[in-house]
Amino acid sequence: MALRLWGRRIGRAGALVIVVGLSAIVAWTFALSWRPSATSYPYQGVDVDESNGPIDWWTVRAGGADFAYVRATYGGTGRDTRFAANWADVYATGMRRGALHVYSICNLAVDQANNFNTTVPRDRDSLPAAVFIDFTKGCESRPVQRIVIDELRRFMTMVEEHTRKPVLMKLSRRFDAAYGVSAAIPRPVWAVQDFFPPDYAARPWRMWQANDMRRIDGVSGAVNWDVVAP
Image 1 (cartoon, rainbow, N blue to C red):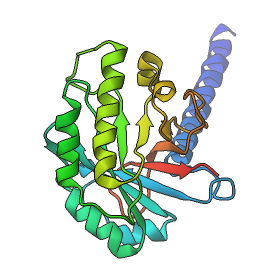
Image 2 (cartoon, rainbow, N blue to C red):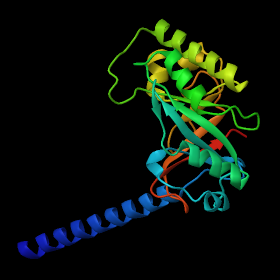
Image 3 (cartoon, rainbow, N blue to C red):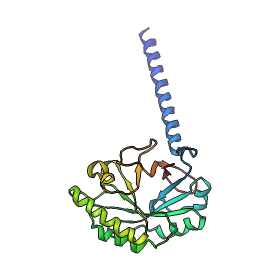
Image 4 (cartoon, one colour):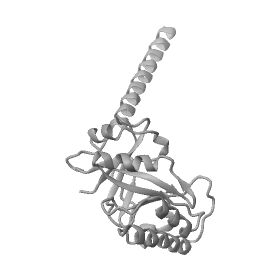
């Protein structure tokens, strides 16, 4: 009797494990393909860097991307090895394109702005330049808020003199919580949060990175999927 009872319990536990496992697989598969409704957010696109490798941009466009941000530079000297190819190939498809810099609080703003401005050609038809502001790997420095805000303003001013357009701030939740960038600097915000519209910035976001694990045809591996505020 006892053995039979334990057998039933083990059977129920095994069935539960299978159900949970299948549910996780379904959820994971859904996450890899999910994007916000095109009805609610009609303008959608991607942002990529060299880690995505060669991209078939015609296929990306056919898959529903209206625009692409491509990483150009990072820090004071880093340059994305795929920037020139991505910049030209996105343009060839007729998609709107924008260039992105990954900011580091361990490098001077002047050096970072010069790195970006000498890498990205001035193009009046391109989207506003974007700067990704987050704590970066290998940078342990934590300057006081006044210094961080002053340096970011200096970077943006220099880039805007080059591009003639306001910089778009792609701003992480943790960095904004630490330094209050969205409250201190009046620039459009590109907020970052998977699956649920973000609400952490001091002003309404203009763009939202909605899924950093999306898989689409034309790109090897996961890609950041972004939408513009309606």
